[in-house]
Image (cartoon, rainbow, N blue to C red; front, side, top):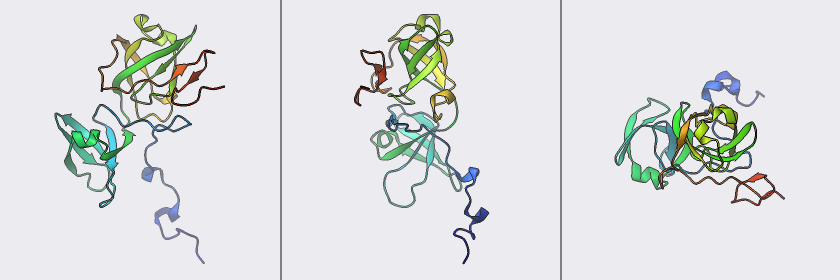
Length: 197
């Protein structure tokens, strides 16, 4: 009796080119929320069970329309309604690997290391960066920064965070609220969860 999968290409063994790209791992922080801002490079798939749930990426967003491209098969192009994308008719899968301009919130500072949250990557997950990598006007707790980062990164070290400068908080409805903060003992936690005891 033959082994399971022996008639499959490669004998059923995993192949890197068939595996989905790594995205933000859970690690107890929960999945990232549905995006408030639609950007080229975001990946979605339909919530409806009609037909196959084929992944697609946003190519361009203008007004109420998003030009999209399937990530499999003939990679055909189509147009989706931004209203339906925002309303959750499609499930957010993650980002394509590229650099995105976004915001970071400085949560804590010590002598050499700053803890920031990049809400569009994950609003409850802390990211440690060197204080020297922050602009001089952004080296204070509670400050907002404009940054560039690879939002497809599965963990903080792969974000390749580069701070551009201090800024005003993001306009309402464009960025999730940071959910990571410090408790009275100086330990971090996501307010939605129980503070570490």
